[in-house]
Length: 513
Image 1: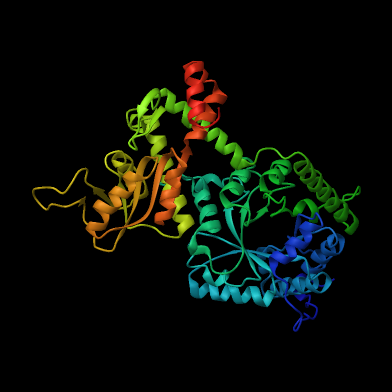
Image 2: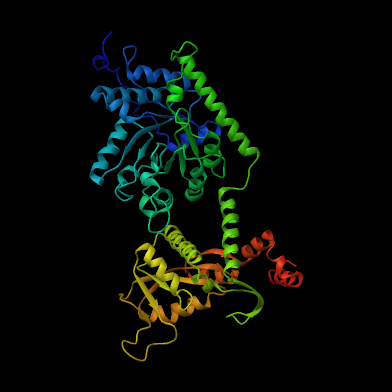
């Protein structure tokens, strides 16, 4: 029998003139059928069959089961031009057999823009519907790979291999791990928005991170989950975590667990491959149906509850929350006073709250697509937090002065070095009516020639603040609201400790009695 390199590839057919289906259209159709299995076509040729013949057998055995196929470029490119020709032949075979099945070119490509033009051309010649992309060069560099609205770009976020945490878990200056920043940027950052739908790779061998990734990415990002099968990934956690709010949005990839499945005699056959694919497909469907029938709180809802509980517990511990009768800046009286400045005393609380402000700034920038020239603290309450945020993000800092203009020296309203026309993100500890924000904008920033790109606060005490900021067109993010603080106190029993009279007063104040 002739060797692999002597095997001439069969004629590659073209599909010119046929309407091209978009990658998301293909996936939506398969998800509607309840199909979420991606079959990896990672094969090794031997004397019994060529690469194409082995992969063809897998496709023939699974074409009514698979939602997608994923040939790994290395298995084919390792045999030079002959192997690449067989990969082209394989994709052609899939496309003529089942046009609606997504083909993912698992190439993990990315480089500078000119080189990426070549990779994009290679994807077109291969006629793949999708490709895997490594994020290291950033979203602007990979623009040529993400401009076709019919193609899906799947970016490596957290891989399934042992040792993936060596770099992917590195903590950035902002406090988040590197893989989380990748997910956020790919899903939300304008530098990754070039016209193509996007997806992320999240390895099933790190199951606790998959639901976190879905929460960060939102509903529109496709999630490819490898590592099920011989790598030992957690199928149940993967399906539950990867599902979006519509119960779709994901692919579970199995490669050698299907392509290498043996029969009772230890031989890989078309029937043994098919039975393995059916088994994985049924397992995915079972878990998927269980998740649909018994929906628990979303990762977002669980995160909010856990976040509120921890933050409010810290508020109580460091005497941020006080109960009694207090006059607010607005002139109104309230039975609850929130003194966020007490956070600065305790090192752990200070560190955690500073990180919350960093997260709020980054979230606002992702939502607006705008990064301000400076971080600034609203005097006096935002001074400490602005300095900590600017330091952690490596950003420039300016400082609006408390009170009026200096009567000596430069007479500046805003301290620091800046240019007219530049902008700031304003850090505030608490917003009720947003009057203090407007005062700083109108009396300090605008007279100094500075604009406001957005404002963030730890607590939004009153919906009026949200309304007022929106009317002024100032983007605004906050970590927690007063009603959520009270909910956490009630659930923990902390509010009851204040006594029934105080509890009634607080609930009446919130409009709950």
